[in-house]
Image (cartoon, rainbow, N blue to C red; front, side, top):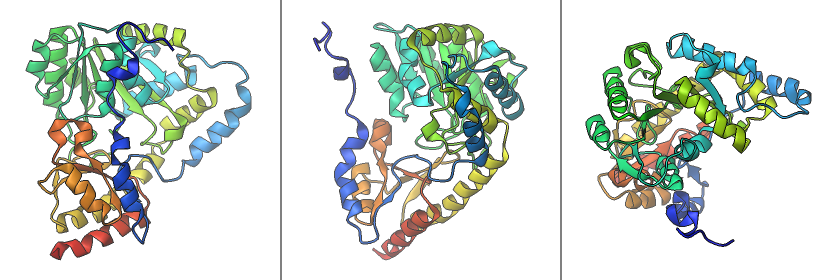
Length: 375
């Protein structure tokens, strides 16, 4: 392939972060009891029966291509979910858009919005790395800030916020969300609110930008991203969706039609069924809460401090040292964690420890941490 005049796209992108902990992974694997991998947020629990039935029932009904906009049944399920779970005002089909997993959306949103050189994308100071990757793919400039006023002053085209947040689990209050809405509107920016962990809150109640008390009764300039991956243990289905400003979503729909970005038909059927069932979400929430109740005190007894962590599927832990030293310390005990510098310089003294492991592996991690109390 002949590089473009500005160089290959890969040159704009950072190294893939998980490649940098290969040594720690091998170290953890050498533990006599095997590795306890708490470095990633991949669900390990069963796919809900409601999804399996819907997927199976739809399997023979999709000889043709699905639509990018999704089936009427899926759009209706998304609208009902937003209205009942997140207290949005009444929505039209133009306010929803299925996407092929939330990571695809995050990585390509700046490009699909037409951003490029000279545009600014705001991301949190400690953030999911793909926010920055998406800006770099589009050739836009990144500003990392947690201050709405500073963000607005930069006149960005796009602002990302995330609550409950990955990696640190902080939950933004309604007042703070309103400040971000006001800042984005004053700057003429699209505000993209990543709410994929919204079903998992422990110490505070999450609020959506879809709530009229936050957005003043208008979705203008606002989009919220949701995913079924964590909520419903179907990360392999690649099922996510956007809800928000009809003008923004209509623009994205047009671009995505040209790109052929279609959620497979049987997956759309499964997604509609999952959105209509909350019992499996509550059951999964209880699983994660039980694991949190085992792992958090074990870490604290081992002289870790847990910061934020009000929600999401992670514990944001520190020993007040460089995160790579902490990763090595844990790897010696057969535990693999994600170093905080994956998520920006502000995370350099923390590690992200996931609750997405089986009960047995979580118990093993707690047992391995216990002797370190006297170390």
